[in-house]
Image 1 (cartoon, one colour):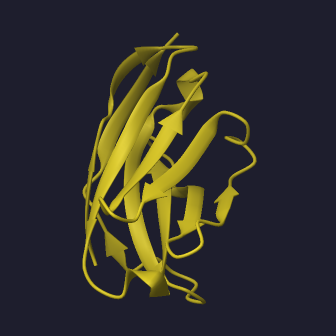
Image 2 (cartoon, rainbow, N blue to C red):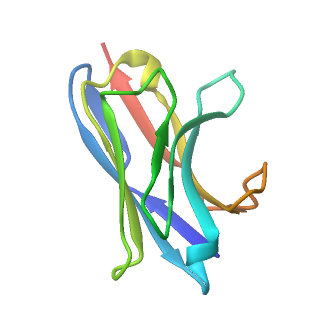
Length: 118
């Protein structure tokens, strides 16, 4: 699976962005797709995920109610809609994929930077 993220930018607190991830590869139904982020000086953390086949979603507590992950199976894209952004959401956002049941993400796209100004 290959992934390519886009859509980051500079936004004021309270604003919104849509991050997108182009997905390529075969047998995508076997995969869980995720968004993870890494803020300056911090460890990478889970943000959201969905199962490619059923679209079952999961979110980190810190983003529930503000972020929405979705996918278009025909276009092979995964989006992360981020609303009501906070300065602490500033990070490099990555899209990633792992086989269902695996503990670690094994395929990664390049990061896209989201900067939230207060």
